[in-house]
Length: 402
Ligand code: R5P
Image (cartoon, rainbow, N blue to C red; front, side):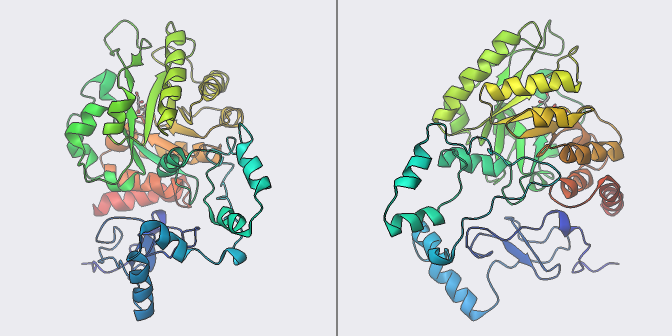
C-alpha cells in the first residue's frame, strides 16, 4: 500500500505562487506541505496531494518571531512592516498573461476621468511617492471591486476556475444535481468560485466556506415555458450583499424576442452593483435556437462589455480568438452539455489558448462519474501547465485511485 506521506505529484495544479506584495508566504496565509515541498493557498489542514499535515508557520525561530511580530500589529501596520523598503521597490509587475489571455481589468486601467493620473503626476512629497509605489495596482477600479475581481480571477496567474451549479434556476432538478449540497461539498475546495442561485447558496453551501460566490440574479423562465429569453432581475443588490456575493451573474439573450429587456437589465444591474463595488458577470445565453458561432458570440460578448459587464461568460467556438480579441473584458467559457472527459479537457485547454481567462464548468464536472478527478484535471489546465492529454491522464489516475 502506498504511504500517505508520499507526493503523488498532483500538487502541481494547485500550488500557490509567491505573494508579489512583499509579504512572506506564511504571512499571506499560505500553508506548506513538507512532503511535496510546495505552498498552498488553502484553509485545509492537510495536503490534498499526499495527506501530510500542512505547516502554517516558518520552521526557524527567527521566522516564527518575525511572523509573530507582524501578526501582533494591526492589519495595516502589519502590511507596512512586511512591505519592502520603498526605495528598493519597483511597482509590482502585472501578472504575465499566458497563451494570449487578457489581464483582468486591463482596459479599465486607463483612468476614465483622468483623476488617478492627475494625482500621481501632481504628487510632490517623497512620502506620497513612496506610498504610491507601495500601493496595490487596482487597475483603475475601486478597492472593493478590484478585491472581488481578484477573488474570481486569481491575480497570481490571471486565471479563473468557476464551478457552475445554477442550472436549477430554469431546469429544475438537473440530472446529477438533484441534491446540490452533496454535489458541491467535495468540489468546493478545488474551484476558485461557485456560480449558483441564492436558494442553493442558503440551503446547500456551508457558510464557513472561503470560496467566493458568483450569485445568479436573473431568471423568470423555465425549460417548459414559452420563451427562455424572458428573464428579469430577480434578486436585489441588498440581498446579494447579505449573501456576501463576490459577483452577480445575469443572462442576456442577444437576437431573441426579449433582447431589449435582458440587455437593459444588464445595464441597470451594472449601475446598481457598481455602487457597492460588486462586479457583474454577463452570460451570453443562447436559449434553444440562437447560434454559437464566432460571429454571433463576438457580437453578444461585445454588447455585454459595452453595457459595463466586468466579466463575460460565453461558449467556445471555432475562431474563438475573434471573440476574445474584440471583447475588452475577461472572458470565461461555459462547459456546455456533458461530453466525454477528454473532450471537455480539450475544450478547457483550447479556451485558454484562445484567450479566455478560464472556465465556468458545471455538467462536465458533476455529471462525470468522477467529479473530483474531473475538476482537478480541469484545474491542472486552468492553473497549471497541463495540456489536454496530460490532464486526461491525471483524470484517469485520480479516477482509478479515488
Ligand atoms: C446555465 O444556464 C448556467 O448559466 C451554467 O452556469 C452554464 O451553462 C455553465 O454550466 P455548464 O458547464 O453545465 O454549461
